[in-house]
Image 1: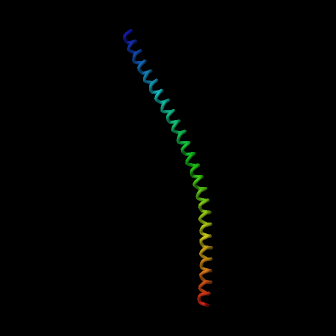
Image 2: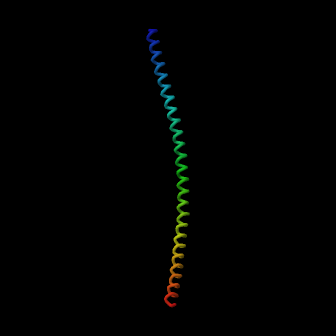
Image 3: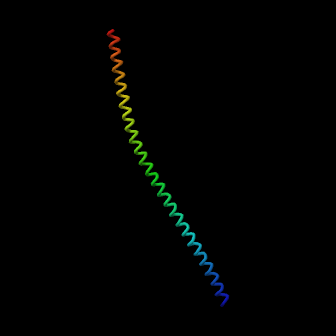
Length: 93
């Protein structure tokens, strides 16, 4: 009877240790998952900030492109008008 109780005690102790190990591993995995979640949250926040900055850059560049386009059109018009004047002077002269 004592041998059986000793055997049961060993079995229960082994099962208890196994349960403790599993609980420890579960806790570690939970902590790792929480850390990864926090890291990913920071990555997402950084990506959102980058997105906002890129959208602002696109708006700024759009304005620059429009300005340059208008400047080019104006410059070409002025050049063509001068060329017409010179052609008129050349043909009249």
